[in-house]
Structures are given as C-alpha cells and as structure tokens.
Image (cartoon, rainbow, N blue to C red; front, side, top):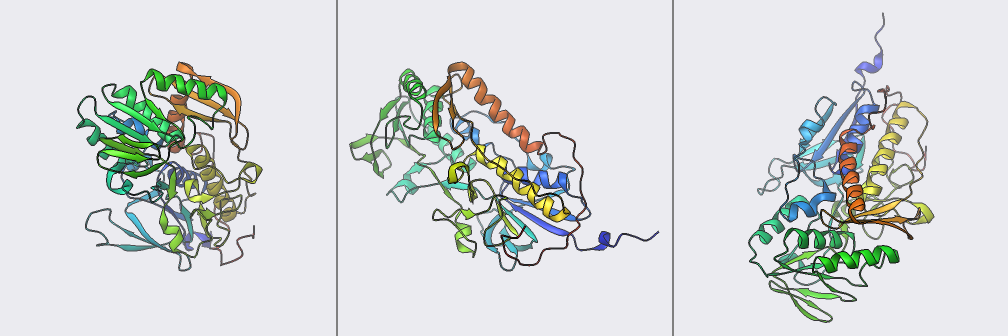
Length: 409
C-alpha cells in the first residue's frame, strides 16, 4: 500500500502570539479543526496562566481569581505552549522574535518561523501622554498592573482618598468594585463627560443610583491635566488621591507599528472580513489588535464581546483556506454591554447591532447574575473553543501559500 506523500510533507507552521481570550480561543479552535500531522500550532505568551481580563478589577481589590494554567488548558490538544515575550516580528521574513519574560531582558532570545501568524497581542492602558500618569497612576489593563494596585490599596489607611480616572466601562467597573470592597476608602470617579453618557436614560439613572449608594464622589465634565503622588490635577482643581487608577481607554501593543503591516491610525492592524491582514495574507489579527469592519462600517470595539468572535472567524478562515473548505463569513454585531457594579449590582445595556444604546436595560441583582454568567461563559468558551460541538480535524490539502494579494480568497 502506497503511503500518502503528504504525511512527510512540511508541516504548516501556525504561530499564535498572545494567549488572552482571543489568542487562546484561536489556538484551541485551530487545533480542533486541523490534523496534527499536517500543522504545528505554537502559542506564545509571557505568562503561564490565562487571565480573565473581564475580572481584573476584582483581582485589583483583593479578590482571589481561579487560576487557569495554560498548560492544563491545552494539555492533549497538540498546541505547543511557549512562555516568552514577543520582542519583534519580521512579517516579510515570516519570523517572530521572542525572549524569556525575565528582568534580564533579551538574553536567550530566539526566532520562531511561521507560515501563518495569528496576532493577538491585545492592548494596554492609554496614558494619553498626560504628565505623571506613568509614574504615579495604576492600571488594570493586565494582571501585573492589577497586582500592583492591590498591594497599594492594601497599604492604605481608612479614609484615604482613591481616585478613578475615566467614566467608561473600565472606570465604572473599577470604581464600584473598589467602593464596595473597601467602604473605608474615599472613592472618587472623574468623567470627561457626564456619568454614563453612553447609556440609555434608564441605564444612566441606575448607574447614578449605585454610585450614590456606594458613596462614590463623581466629578463630571472634568479633564485631568496631571497626576501626582498625592493628588490629581484637573480643569476643576486638584482632587486628593493616595492612589490613582487610570482607565481612559486602551492602546494597542506597539509592535505592529514597527512592522510593514498596514495599520490604522490607532495602530490596530487593518483586516478584511476573515481577519486577514490587508497587506500580508499570511498574517491574521484578532481582538483588540485588529481594525476589523463591523456593522454600519464602524470598526469593532475593543472588547471581549468583539474579540472571541474574531478569533473564531480567523481560526475557521485559516482552516478553510488550508483544507479547501468553504470560507466562513462573519456578520459581527452587538447585542448588549454587560457592566458589573460590584458583586451585588449590575447593568445590562441593550444596544443596536452597531453598539448604540437603546432604551431597554436590565438592572440590579438580575443584571449582576447575568454579567457573572457572561464572565463564566467567556472563560468556558476559551477552554472549549468549538463549544463542545462535534468536529473533526481536516487534512491540509493546500501547500504553504506563496505571497499573494491579500484580497485573494
């Protein structure tokens, strides 16, 4: 019996960088879709654990999150986990440079070649170049920042002022979680506009009610001009702050800008409807790293709600192109914004397909339970990337693709 020659052919090397919600989901889904003899899948991440970023404010106020080791998550899947920090990408030479995530820096750096790259490095806090933010403020864009804030909060005496800058989802969740967990602290929230100005009237009223109940002082229509060790300077004067939490949006990882990848003004990689780079057809960008077309021509919002669907779309598109299957099409849309307001309160703001608030909103304890279900569901979906639906690993039928137009199917 003649052996199938493809068993000895070059394995298609897929490298996924970043193991947040999107990167971990994409790696697991690819492993479930493709035959192990035909592909190698390497997942690069600086930390050994999967971090539930939607719960990071809970970690910051001292709550214990369930550990989710990536090694356990991917045991038996065929995904190779490489614990390292990405230090560079050569998208023309198809290599990723990584280094051990140690204070020593680039010692032990190595080059990882790829045939297909899935870029899922996500985002970090955006300081907006405001003086003193980097030196004096804290962030909860990742686990290290949350742990630093946790240590700082633990050292504060009762009555100490803590200020949260930013009236968006992250700021609101951070401020309410903090005020509930530490009622002994004097918590302030600074919003550039009015509190909850992105919400429906019902949603905004509920947010105000919860903030009042938690004794959060809200400074509206206020811009921060500088952050100091003991205060925050604003257009309305100085506000005391023994600890400052900065939550004014996210900035993408800067590595993409240093490559020849086509990026949007904000540094996100521009992609087509299959999450494939518009300039490099062997690169896919997902989650916060991608400038992906959404409903109404607006780019998808940086969020878990956008991220996991883009991960599924990219993984399924890569698998389809490699196996000759029908290319999947994604019609992304939004349904709601889920906001935790501490452990006992929540807000589910229903939205249009393009993420604009409608009048309907779920509030109170039912909303808190709904948000908790969403958080648990997101973590479960990462560990079960095909949602436990029957699937089979398909054989690769196409050779490693040559450079071609990104617009090709």
